[in-house]
Length: 172
Image (cartoon, rainbow, N blue to C red; front, side):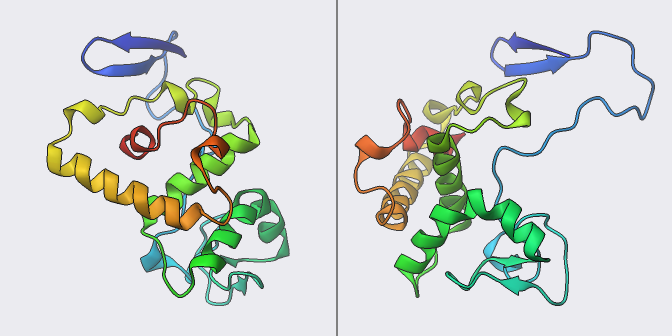
């Protein structure tokens, strides 16, 4: 696989060899993901499997896991989020705020992810300038919600990953 830029369309990938129909071309774990508010409590926060009985995070009481193994594997992504969830209780952030929070925490850890093998998070295009004014204002509201959500872990912009623009991150 090789990366390429398509003018006006963004970044792309193309296969540099012939592939058979149905052949798996690439597989990687997602850089970041979150369970939607609607599905909370019904699926494991780590492996996303549905299960009738899930273990609950003893700290935030929100995150649920299949078993201790899933909980341990998810801890690096959940640790800082857990504090944020507890701090804003009984309020709960929109799904996009939780997702951007997870992205920021992952970037702060400077951990590499197999999904970044081809493109890093920074390589993604936001197309913020192409959004309507109303959509840009909506992202501004989400940015303010994110600041409230993260305040127990990130008190000011100096603690954000270097060069990150939160509005652009929401747009990505």
